[in-house]
Length: 226
Image (cartoon, rainbow, N blue to C red; front, top):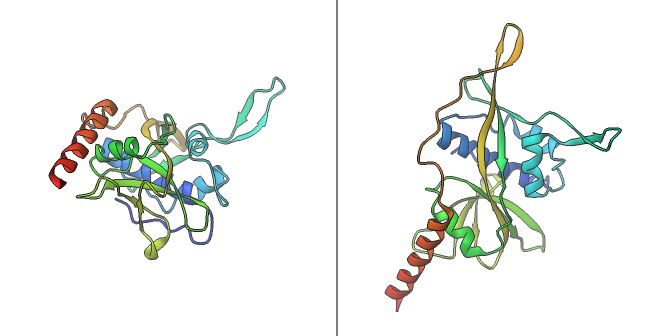
């Protein structure tokens, strides 16, 4: 997993969580490692995320580019989508993010995280002590507990992890991040590369099986605790 990102005093938690999820999914799905700290500012500016952003809207902007105006017929005019550069500095990746539906049930959220093999695939919105909201990248269900999801936080060394529980959970999105295009610099131009990274065959999570397995695990846990 990349080093935890630090949002400092800015309200850019959504951008930080999104970059963490994109980086993890590209690594485990395609064996592609991207630079995270170097791209975070581009993502924050694209989603206008210095003072907060909506998770699903941020995913759309990263995929399609931000709306910068409208044409004569009312059609949207968008900026270019975000491109993520790899650690070898020889390829750029444009991604397609499917955010799916909003998940408002903690058990459904925990079930999907539990089936994700400790890879960040979800961004959760949690309630903070001051009455605000904060976005984190969900990592794993804490061993021995069905009510704690450990999340990658963006509060730097002083708060690199955060526990998401039924009490502070508000909602979440479970992301599918795919590579849409690959770009290389060739003949003094940025060109699309027809070669695509090989996808890990066991990448996808069966959401129905994940939920069934989760509730079986919870039932078993209750049985042994009685």
